[in-house]
Image 1 (cartoon, rainbow, N blue to C red):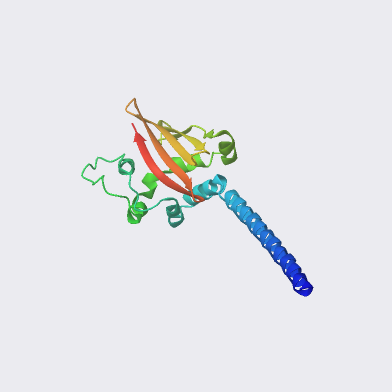
Image 2 (spheres, rainbow, N blue to C red):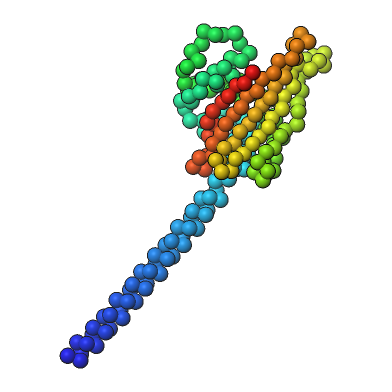
Length: 202
């Protein structure tokens, strides 16, 4: 009987030791999980997405720029932006924008004025302050007369993970000034920056 009791005690201690080992394993597992989550959070940086986006735009790497848009892209305003300088009113503005459309009209969607202005944005300042503005730029004709004045304002809402580019234009024509603004709304989702909406305001 005494022998059986000793075996039971040994078994009990062994069982408790296994439980402690299991708890230790679970604790290590949770710690590893937290480290992985922290790594994922750190890898979801706006700066990396922003710098990559403007770099691909500047290099005209259209296939890489497409990564920042989910196709088909549903937003009627993008067609108004594409045909802003055109009188083509027969186009179907209700149609979604597909990849072939983007190949054809990417310069109208992301014009040179926007690309040049994006290069002026200090992304670290933008993240820190939530707002950063590029310098006012001008485009002149052959005689040196100003044709277009434009300025970019970038805003970032860390809570909503929303990045907004507001391009303000002034067009000078026949001693008249025409104003318009183009707003690009991006969302930082699953560590990827995606174009969410385009708004054209005259």
